[in-house]
Length: 148
Image 1: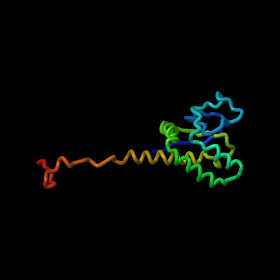
Image 2: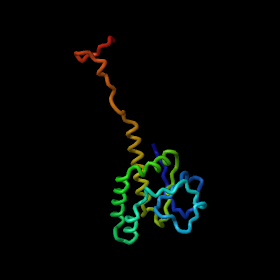
Image 3: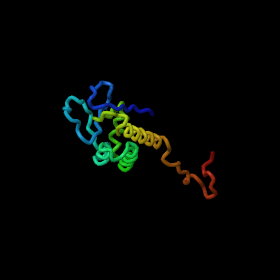
Image 4: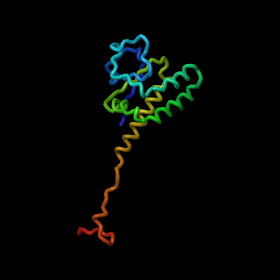
């Protein structure tokens, strides 16, 4: 199945095509009244930890180190993706952030993690849970005890 997850700056005007609008930053964006944002939710649990964000902002770590560590945070808390996955299954999901450069932010990594988790869940749903048990239908010789 295909899922539509868009990335958008919180300062951009809301659009009727946005679907579920979820702010995924730890901190509330400066100067933004909640009413203007038309948010579906403000979901902090899937955003990078404050310490990790601070290290990137201060230049203590590179973008590639940030990406590895953030993926690790997401991997260590897979349940944090469930609310976002539910929104993506219902239709378009727009992930919002106050960051200036969306492509250099955590949003592409988060979108990738959500899509990966959705694909994994979809694959698990299509595989059979267990083979049927025919043991009760066999006689002592391992033959089918029923007449055909």
